[in-house]
Figure 1 (spheres, one colour):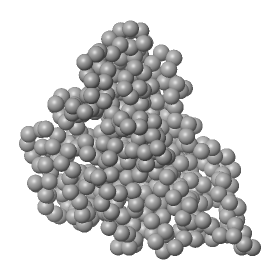
Figure 2: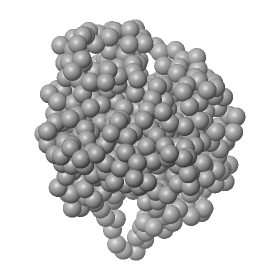
Figure 3: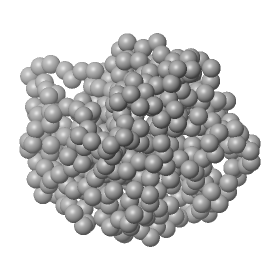
Figure 4: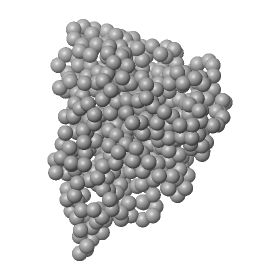
Length: 506
């Protein structure tokens, strides 16, 4: 079984501590970061800021935030294959909405996000002006994900004793705080550096502000499951923040996901990897689905749900990049793989471990067995594998793209915001996929286009909730989910903080 176990171990006593904000120098921190006493020593804020950036790699893996954002939606499924990939039903529970407060990936996501908030706060308390501004942006991003996934958000006021329980913002309070933080620093953040979107920048802050205002009606609703009201003023804010972004679309969709994707003008914020260095996590995005006998080899696990795949034209370039070099290196198109798989060169057919033709079929069940054990389900490669170094690939992990910003603006206008869409750019977004036509202007059309463009980029659950689709029945979840599942539960251990209360329904 291939599970993501790279999250650092967190003791029960430090589970509460990890949610802290600024601390004073008299305290010793219990998560492995030791702060010098006032008797001597300094805080290495440069190292801590690097650690806060490296914490973004937690989004690269198949578990934690990626699993909660994508496995819970309608695109990605993690079937049990005989005795493999069950992990105590971890993945199936996420996909069919039966998770509980003790779910391992729920706990891992909570701890990962709040531990990085803590690291950012150490920099904000002790760093230089430039370091503080970057740390405030990173903290806002980590907090955004806590708000989105869990609602309640722990925080600690500057200088408060670590022995005290963290205070807790409501979802509305946390949303307003993060918006105010980003608006306070956006003017101080540098312009995005060409070829390196891995540093906090003004474009990324405008993107995150647009995302917050777009979801404000969800985050501040009296009932997390809706109904939602999207204020015209908030939608106009979305438009203005997107308009403030200085960017352009990549000519080729796959420029955003190739090993040298740092050169794409479209990427607004990413987690930077260095070939041969600490960047191996990105390989999850091809290995989690690929068969053992493919190049690159994989773990024969996750798959794309056929119902989701069927939304595409089969020749949509976003799910089928069959460029000659890709076929030469890997044998098969990158994107979503269905049908017979081949060895590098694309001529010699592959077989599974039982010597049957390796032919991926769209049909997949939550528990597979028998002859289809290794072949059931459409497989996916969102990132082009780095043929020069499959184990330590050079691809940067993408968080924010200009295409998403353009679609957010179109949605905001459709929801009543003031502004004018850039028709030429939206048309280019559609045409580069090999499709004919113009970008849709209806909410239903925008929702479908977001699904096609942003598959497995971490936004599906968020989109489905905002459009009222998340709880609905679908192919492998043939029932309407209970309203409680629009938020994940607060992990059981975290409830030792009396200021936290369990989310409704759990």
